[in-house]
Image 1 (tube, rainbow, N blue to C red):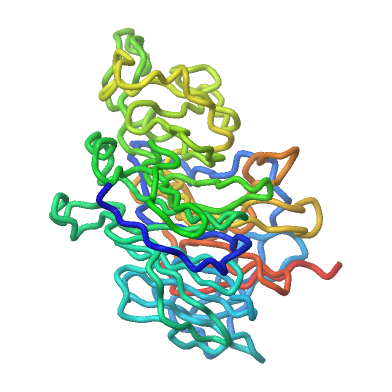
Image 2 (image 1 turned 120 degrees about the horizontal axis):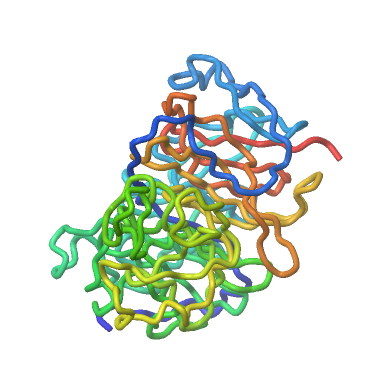
Length: 452
């Protein structure tokens, strides 16, 4: 493969938590109902809560009162202003790093009395996005490479390359045509490095035969070495993190404008709608996977799509997001010759179509009924009607897997679909609070749980 993997520092040990990537996916619908809910679980009992905004941070969109939806007893405040804030990771000395791909830098936020002190940790990078720690080593995923930096006392040393030659818009064969260039990175308990490589576009079959293969998660062995495809058919694995089970999990932005795959009527006119792009079908299909990756796993794209319908292909079917099977994509795999969809392992969990999940991180011992679980920054749909609202979603860790989605933080979208914020990632801080980045509002929020 043309992507070159270089030696990693052998001092790296335990895995750091996660990070993610961009490129929101969505779709259209002709309906004009209230905003479609994202959560599929029973939830944790959200209440309206005024967002606490320090006077010094009260520029737009915080120049007027904002209300969020959060669990009863939690308080939510505007903690910092960071333009284009994307993915985040806590340092070993309890500072928060935030990536800014558009600015080419990584911001360091040092907590103090009142507002954190903001400084630039790294600059001049090529779309830095994913951030992960393993011990005192910081991994930064740029659009075309991953580097490892020794970290101490709010500063980094010289980088050591981990992987380079990763595909991005500057790659010769892509000539600027790359919709999902941002990369995510995580490190497992053994020190192996994982990096997401998104697809070129919505449906770009050539990605599966490219060198290096795109729409994948690559794995770099502990201590360094040649990268290899760990999982494929991952259209845009924006969320990437190691779970409590030691496995790598991914939250995926799935495809748009899926054609109706069944040889039957869906719109009620009696004729077959197979192969037609129907707004009301596209609005809820395919689901956005939240999947446990194993070596060699295939998540199907672009030949197989995970289906949330309890009654496959039936208009108005109840939507189910746990343990969902795949159906053939009628445009790319109508006869099943490209990939056997029935042979693919069901998707462990999922979100509503076009939710656009970005950051993925795992939290422990959240108060009340929450406990351990996954935090997902749901960016919300970009052109679905009604829009899928942005939120911070929580998936409880139960019996070695993830339970149904619940909203942990919402309220960013009005009834008419207008938004004042879009969460990207949520990470648990060393103080037990949850910190949320928002690239639309240029903000970092702090969710403080009730005192135990």
